[in-house]
Length: 67
Image (cartoon, rainbow, N blue to C red; front, side, top):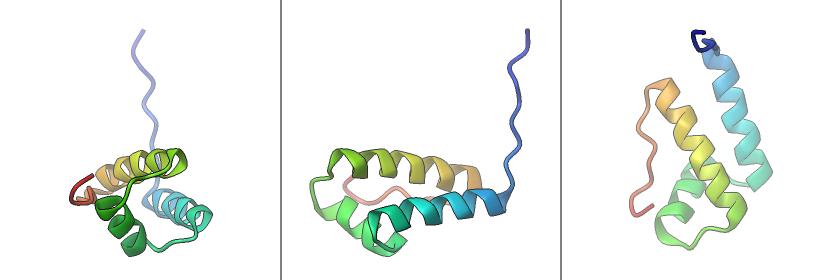
């Protein structure tokens, strides 16, 4: 059986990224700075993985330096 293909709209990915950042109480720039310069908590590591996946799907490069 072939794997299922899921289509996600750009707007949905952008909205999901915004919800993640709102939950963390940070902007994307603030989070990228924290990820590059600090030790992340468990929730922040989860958010980093989600944000990297979203950036990949959007065709962006969002891996913070040092992470």
